[in-house]
Image (cartoon, rainbow, N blue to C red; front, top):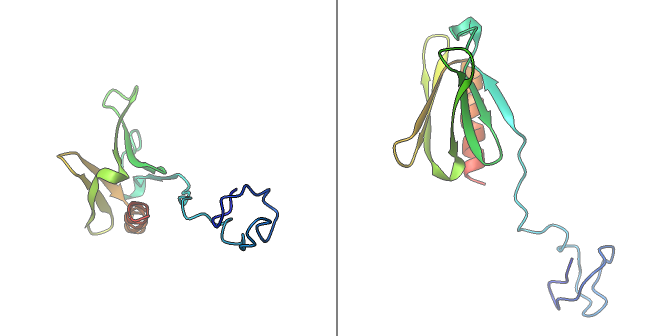
Length: 134
């Protein structure tokens, strides 16, 4: 850690810089640090019409939204992802008891995740918007 006043290297436990006397309390909370987010995973609900053999998953990582679904042969998974820097909008297509989540990117890539609960869809949308605006 360095003093923002004079550039002197600090050990980290000083309250004031020994060279210029500037307070180091501001040094510990560096504005360059990005907020760290936990990885969140959401599954389509079987009770709301989702497939028991191939549920759809939306995984929100620190850098992107990942969509996973088992392929039609039930052997592997199909996966697509959109980095937060390319997401242009997130929409919720609300139905009677469930909802679909539509994530659009710049370009023509889009993720359509179906059969999520309405509360999960709202949480997904707010988490994506929060991570885009960090």
